[in-house]
Amino acid sequence: MGGAHRPRGDASFLLWGAERELLVEDPRHRDALWTSRVWPGAVLVQGEIVGTWRRAQHAVTGQSWSRLSYAAKPAVESKARSLPLPDLDRPIPLDWDEPDG
Image (cartoon, rainbow, N blue to C red; front, side, top):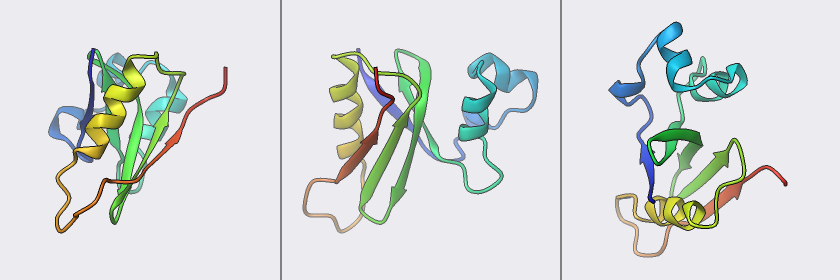
């Protein structure tokens, strides 16, 4: 099991209408991923989009749409911390927003 981060505006997510519904069933989650502003990145776990992520300077914020499994969460966090950010000589701070329950 591994987590992955797809970059903002990744060509594999430049879809429209029904194509987006195939990737993300819940309309609220589609709205969170395909915003009218700069799109966030997609968080993937086992090939499924499970949330979004954003980077501001040298910090990453993740938003999951449901509680991640015990194994998935550290995998996603590890990927976030390994993002190739220029001129960074310390671990990437990760702020994780996950639903309760």
